[in-house]
Image 1 (cartoon, helix red, strand yellow):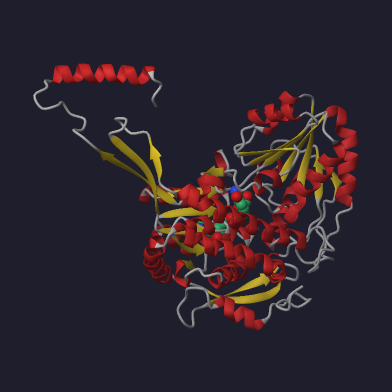
Image 2 (tube, helix red, strand yellow):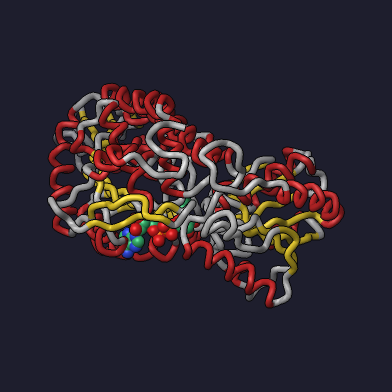
Length: 522
Ligand code: NAD
């Protein structure tokens, strides 16, 4: 524990004052209270930006972007490398604030710290290589020099949710900075403090202050204003908001990556290592109390292993330690808000009322804190129940029994979402074959989510209602650039030589086109 958050979760006033100073808002702006999920008590008063403030922030970001883009990419990523080091050095203070603001278990807060380090390391190490100019195949060999270059978009709008207040605030900004952009950022109102701390760490690492502008306020109004000013938008949030953002950007012909919701399936095939699968399923279903876009809400278990798998899984679920503690003594923390608790309770209540059975958990736990809910396993969830059709985004998972791999694949694909899936088997080739049949942007074999998510060289994103575009990997950097095609032509060019008639030119062209194909030239 650091000295910035007391054992009761009260954040040091000096730190709060410093942090909220980072919001772009006029003096004496209206303030909005944020709440600590462990206690439902007020946590901080954050200035609220106006639409005019967003315009001011966008203009300042645009100004700063010019000088930044002119700096060599190696210089830009050196700062990102320093962010990596500072985040690790200050992990206790960061974890405290993340826990105070998001009510999560400390291990979930530390996962965010580690993930930002991974993201920063990847961008710092690979950014220059990904962004460098590349020779491409020219029209006339030896005479046409073709070069692919990547220019920054300018001002990248980042709109982030509350569930991973650190990693979803900063990890999408780092590649934008590496590519030479400024960022206009609207975190969720309940995740402002962590985003502001991340920004102050980036500034300490050497990032020019004006390059990362943070605005605060209501989603449709202030998020909407960010969408109006940005040259590209990285949006993470719900599918319904993603649609609104995409429609507006469509009118402006501005691009976006949309990282949206999921209803993720885990397939446990009949030859799976049951201890490992059960252990991983607990993490994949209940990390961050299920408020994780990659988390599993549907388990498809092969009929012959249903009994032994459930025995192992349920014993581990029963053993999870819930509670509000600023140390590693608890496995699962609180839900984020009354709305999140209401949703989890409604999904469980509706399922039970319609005939589902509770195998583990099933209840809210007001004795632990206002918004705690037990990790819950349901059996007999069928279409038409809330827990079957929509994303719960809470600690609730439904178990289904399947008779074959084909049935598991068919049921897993029976959803408009397609973010993450997990396959468990003792035969990796079988796992890969199943993975190829899943309609999902991400598939983990013999892991729940961390293998793919943590491999920052892999592009991550969803299909269908789970989104558009990819974060991480080359794509995660290049999305923030406009690709520019530059060709330099030497010699006479692509027209008939002086005095040559067009019949002869067409004949010559036809012959050389045939030769090129025979030579296998692209
Ligand atoms: P949300 O869509 O309500 O809000 C996300 C962000 O958008 C917030 O900052 C919010 O203020 C802002 N916003 C709201 N309305 C807006 C509008 N009209 N225009 C612009 N911005 C607007 O989502 P949430 O409830 O905060 O987050 C939970 C959802 O996010 C879940 O569905 C979860 O699956 C998804 N999520 C997805 C990923 C991923 O990588 N795919 C990661 C985390 C969360």
